[in-house]
Length: 136
Ligand SMILES: [Fe+2]
Image 1: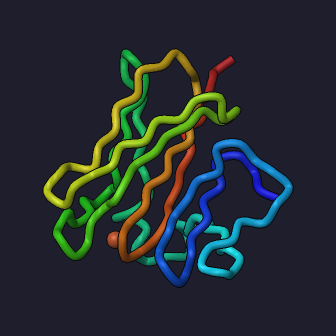
Image 2 (image 1 turned 90 degrees about the horizontal axis):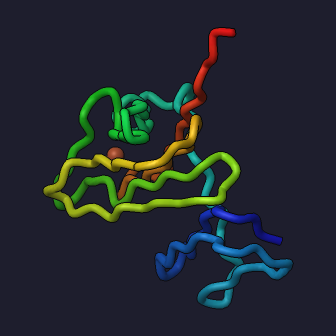
């Protein structure tokens, strides 16, 4: 059984898919079950500072940059996409990147909180969440 916005990959051919609408069946590619892709835990990884999405609130919504330290954007090592969604998963925005581009995603919305995920072609999936703190 799958859940909305989960990522799965095929370890044989490299297919990488996201669940748009979940179902009860198992995802299979190249004759084998696909592997569910989990985000790295930033606190366990020395490379987290270059990968964890950095989310800032703006006047129009949010700006998501990758890493507190810039991540390489070179042919053999780059951020393949940046994605953001609302915590209730009612909206999703994804930007595919080329190696020469700056890994930034801007999101116009009137929401208070967002989740951001990015995929590095070498170091895998990373995520972070912006939660507005209200002082009341
Ligand atoms: Fe990386």
